[in-house]
Image 1 (cartoon, helix red, strand yellow):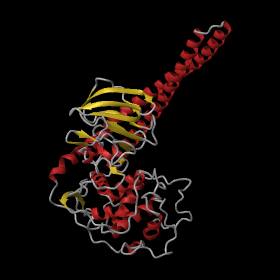
Image 2: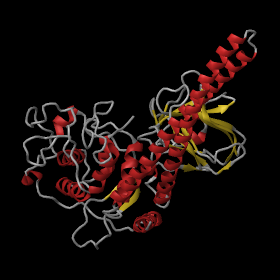
Image 3: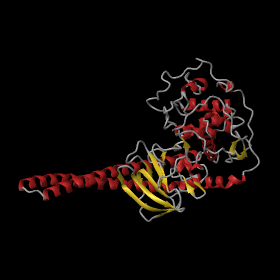
Image 4: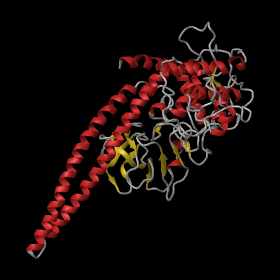
Length: 492
């Protein structure tokens, strides 16, 4: 916990300063021609055939590149200085797009590498930054410099919001990048401290989700075998012939042996889940302070609040999505990675819950919110032990983890009103989270237009006091027009 103190303090100061940003700002410095650094200019894309790329451009390398924090930070800073783009923006895009090189694709849309370029766009803007003769999207230096070049081509030296919008045409994406970059601007160590917290949380959640799913499957087996034993024994008890009765009792005994073995498996998996739950508790406590700082909600998948309501799945709009409609009746299928945290959507009381999967709903719960509405959650991989009938829940209280138990295709939270007479998506509180807690799968007509944004001011001059970093001021600004061709696709 001692090592987390500087981060908690830094983030707390950043949040406190958000409403009192100083009027003085950094201006964009004049820079030498990029060509003088041996790098291609951002004024024009590559000519066809002018840049060498890997032969199998969309095939990831057998041994992905591994960089230290110091090396990665150095690349962000050097690429940003070369093309007039704040390094914090490059770092934020790197985090959101590939999780610092841990998830480089190809994505479902075909985006590749450290900064998730589409292959066709890479041919236009790819840079051989490390001088090995090949512009390689799977190489961190090449990819980050190429992203900086593309952002500069989209006007990033004077309007970073416009450039990030050109990178991915979605307001929620721009806000997520700039919010995270704003945090990185509070100190060079913040990016990696937050990254360690996220890695720890993600691993702990995944372990609990896996252990819980295995336990749930074992419990289903026990329940099934118990029925078999009961059926054979009842049949034996009513058999007219002794020989028949003995045969049936033998079958019941064999089934009972399998039941005892299955119960032993349940006990082992309960112990495994208990250990995983302990580690998750530690990870949650470590992230508790930073999770309340502005900009960390998508990164740490902490609750997103609005007027007493909380979006029920954490992770932000790059990972969480929902359609305006449901396949056969009014409900919301909120898609998110397995193990994503699930929260109480409002102050509420648990009406019932079940940790043994229901054939259709899987693991789930039903709660009644303070306004009297009744909500059912389905397909969880894990249910918090505290979520039992009669329990009172605060808005944002953790209730479980996303899964695919029951009749489900892929991990998601099934959310419905009871009775299911209207869509949750039509609730004003639900729609208000579009672009901040989730993205629409079928277009963005309900996504609010942002009237404010964080404007970044490039690199500090040498006279900047140590540790102050760039200043990010909140300014009114219309939605940025499209820049060059769309480059990247984030996770669906």
